[in-house]
Image (cartoon, rainbow, N blue to C red; front, side):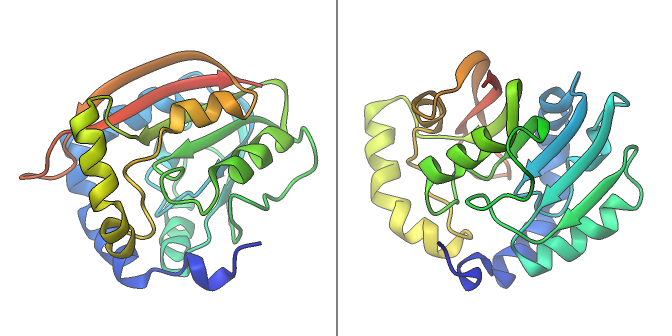
Length: 211
């Protein structure tokens, strides 16, 4: 089981919070809207960050349990929850030990988080555990580039990037990991997106899978 200290990245969390509005203006706002459009019932959001998704939950959502391990980001998310259009409770926790019983949620949301969890198989197994049969895993993630040369570059920079970017690993084939975890990928879109000026267009996937 990961130690709580593994999830504390205060400098990265502060930097992430500062650039979040810019990233949204460059396209992430629309990505988040599409990620959550049509969601309903009880939702658990894994790695809620500073709560940028909260404003996009539609009226059909009855409750959101937002799990965030980083103290700095969780405090910011709690402030965002106060103005959310649906009930949101922000709790401490991490992807490999989610709150809630088996099949407790209708939707699991992972948004720019599976790149940084210590173990994707364990995190996705937990997502499957708390999701009801037929429930949806909604994902918005940056992933390993399909181009072999860029994939090799991601392998090279991953150790350093992990140290400076809150544990992020840019070389993970997250879509394949979702399939290996027993989910049926129903809908997915792959696209390039540069979160900040001067950055390369990183490969992202957005869609949903069914348990």
